[in-house]
Length: 90
Image 1 (cartoon, rainbow, N blue to C red):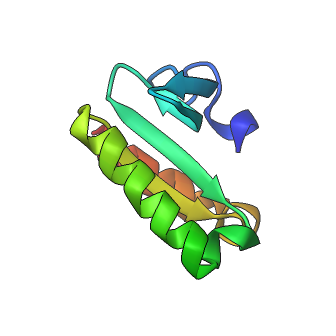
Image 2: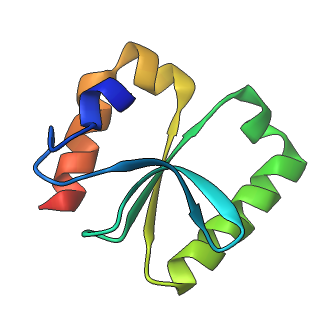
């Protein structure tokens, strides 16, 4: 994923592993107040889903939009993932 969005590949600059509040965002675009999270299998346990929802809520309270993608989607359908990101950036 990083290879696809680093630099200005999508017209905006992304940072990787950025600390926001007490969280480490997988990827963030400060210019667009966008956080991208890529979730592996453990994110789909009941406990982790509750924690992720809380994290998303906290980040959104500070003005960020959080987009979440499953690892499988990034691996198997990167074009759709990038299209979704680009739609938000517009």
